[in-house]
Image (cartoon, rainbow, N blue to C red):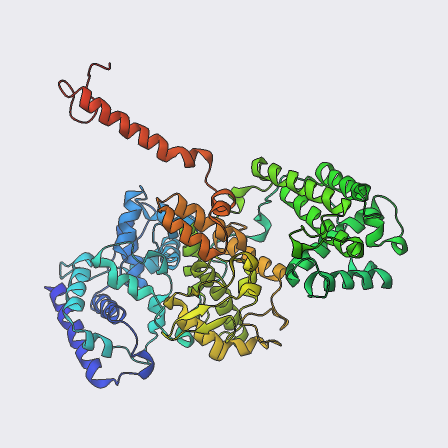
Length: 631
């Protein structure tokens, strides 16, 4: 009777508030499930307020369902039934076991971390638990009955009535802080509960940002991704450049990036040229610190002294040193060889008489280039079979894990802190930028250059259908010379609210001094290093993995190639990502050999089962396990 009375009271309260409170304009876009969940909260509050506190004390041995109910009543929030069932399915049966759950495990089971924390508080403060978890003893109604009645009342209310309940005087954002991880984890019975914790439909100004260190991963516990010892830095710094060397390096950069008369190759991107310069600084630093060449004697000619075959001898010695003393990867060796090749073309360009216009390969008449190309080809063959230097387990995020990370970052796009206090505009803008970088990667798993060079109106545009798309000409991406203009790279509509809010309002708080979409904290454009650091530090903070932007491409390819995608779909993905199907199959697919042969094992098992079932049909069991003549 009391439960039924509570439901009636809830409906009356909803109707009363509906009539008395005008609908705020800012809340008109909120979905009905969130409003329905408010009715749930009120039903539980009515149940608690109508009852004297004769509750059972919460102890470590209290059943997990009762503990969750008590915590939800204290918070005034709906019970995540799917999370309770997941706990029981995984043999977490008591309040003590729930409170001791690692945060990562709790999230994987769909349990809000705030709810887990409250269970811990109730265990440490028995009087608080007794005060918050009781229903009237005299009425003979349990918490479960009250909850069921509340469910009935909320289901019975219309969408318009439930939506009118929301008013500015209530902190409805308190309902929506911790349950993003459990969306879709249960059936229809949990839809309203999940929506109650989900604030994606609220304006950014009304959202609460959860605690940043909620995952518990500390910088002191940062894993090392390689086993090699930390070695001293040896590369030549720009502050050590003599004026002559500085001028030579600037001339090399222009040679590589600017089109000029007599050029034998197309220009390369600014980013690639800078990577080559980094490796050349490494070679020059090695000459100075290991070979004793004075700073005023350092030059590109000191590194590559002739255009003949013998001109590569120092580069060869440097590669041996890298391998034996620094334990670098085969891929790094390949980058060094290509950087040396760029420097050799610059130094001996005037000596080359090759004519690519007549079908001759660029600089093919220079012996130094021939030798470096032979070294590069040998390196590529070695790279195909060489083991990876880095610990993949410390960096790898599966595609579903990456998408969960995107969801966690979206939760941080709130103008209010987890304590309800207003965050600075710059802090909100950084959270939005961080989420958008990851979310765009989830829609367009491209090279990081695409994110760094996004510019509204040039590479990021709205098409005629109102979709935000990334448009690339041949000069805008790495393999543009091979594939030409790319098809439009479409962003998913679910990121439009944050994207447009960032462009229209929040980006200005970062005080950028350029027209690109994303920026560093100092107002300068993102560099490859700054984006790389932003990416891995974010991944580690929330997932405990030092993932980098390029691994996102590997992750989606590995996931799709292991999920039975058709060759037509994989070919389309390769075109979309700007590489060949051979590159997709050989470089981006990170499945182990065992994972790659599993379909063959299953195919053979199925084939054998069918064969045995046919031949042994007279005495078999019909499942391919019969004892036929082949036995």
